[in-house]
Length: 101
Image (cartoon, rainbow, N blue to C red; front, side, top):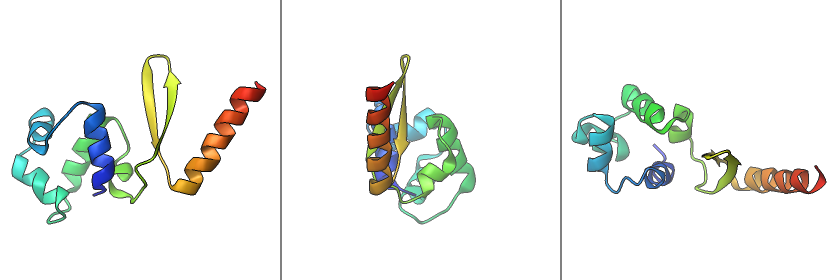
């Protein structure tokens, strides 16, 4: 599991600890710790976390950088996790599109 991604997602929801996350998602705290520390690869738990954070489960599994591009969609913010070069290219395209539209 990508811990930097999980911590960023927790921060977005103002969740301060794994214990609080386990309570919010209604999963056993020890099971969550096993997955976080790499002792277990519980696919059901990863899917449950992904559903809770409204993301694809692959985002929790892939080794993506913690950088984020934030797009405003009304009131909802969408976070896109990307690799550094991909992020830079996407940001440049986004800025160019805004300036030329």
